[in-house]
Image (cartoon, rainbow, N blue to C red; front, side, top):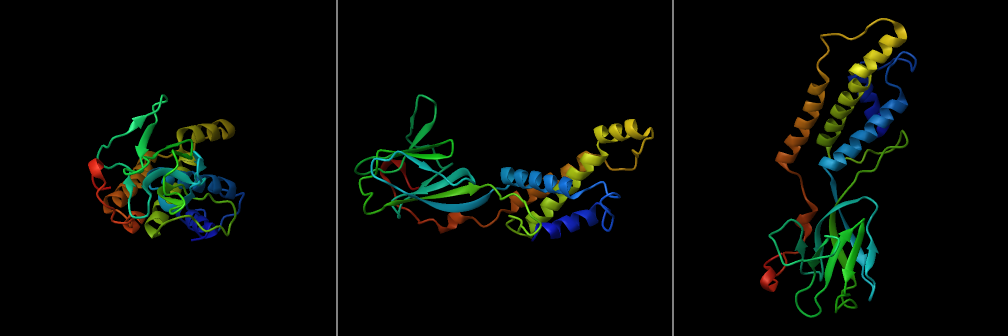
Length: 239
């Protein structure tokens, strides 16, 4: 879906379809700010999933992660083994800064990794770095923000488009019908335009959150289904 299409739907939903910029309370700049706030909120609660390869270099400790990196789901190295984040407790070490180190190898030269400030750290280099030069990372990523009318919205499916529309309804209603906005107009015009029949703003945000929770309950396809089955790795168990 293009941003201009969602913007038109948002205007229809807010009752400002066909109005001029002067007549509408919802100008294009305000709608653009709102949709990007909504995309950030979706990134926080429903991050998308992605895969990246880190080209390991002998004796190099620090590697850049993608700019859209949010959190790690799994690290695969060598190709037939994996280390799952959030799995059963395993032996780790902890730095003086309280950052946990995770074991990447069991046999041979034990390698540890940790992630901090969107950097992937690896110490020491794996023994078979020449044979397997790439470390595969499955991660959750942030969504791309909207800039131009013809930008494609960074959404996973139609459910997420519906959720984003509901966010814009709540966000726009809050911007023009919230107590602060009404008080400001009252001071400017000398008349009140609030109405007791307007639903409480909290009900709009509640619907948005209910839609998020419903999607979380139903689940969605995961890139983790592409992971190798793995092998049992000594005392660490199956990862």
